[in-house]
Length: 171
Image (cartoon, rainbow, N blue to C red; front, top):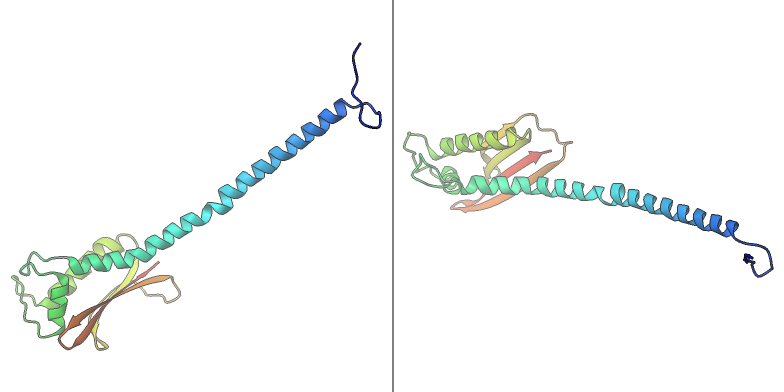
């Protein structure tokens, strides 16, 4: 003899309760799958954007720091900062090949930017100025103000004030 389950009113239960539990389990599984999709496609996506933005922001800073700390082989081992300081004053430094500090600095910086930013398909503007007077201006491509850009300024003290070295990279 088999005992049947009854609910508190006295009705028979069994298969109906099992079906309700199975339905509840299916709903829980579907909600869990939906939650996983939300986590995967919504919450994890902005991390890539943050990483891209951080990398782009650091690009101008790192590039400018590398340029200014670059030492020369043909110009008495001076670094770019010293050449730019000399270029902004009396241009006393003459390199071994006869070029002055301004010409040597401009050509070397142009070469470095072409080997890095141009090869990465980045448009840029490099500018060195003293008291609003531009000493060196190097640009690669058409500058569009509507594009995203990262600007890095580096002030360098000189005898007649402050020299501003600026690199703008357009994304």
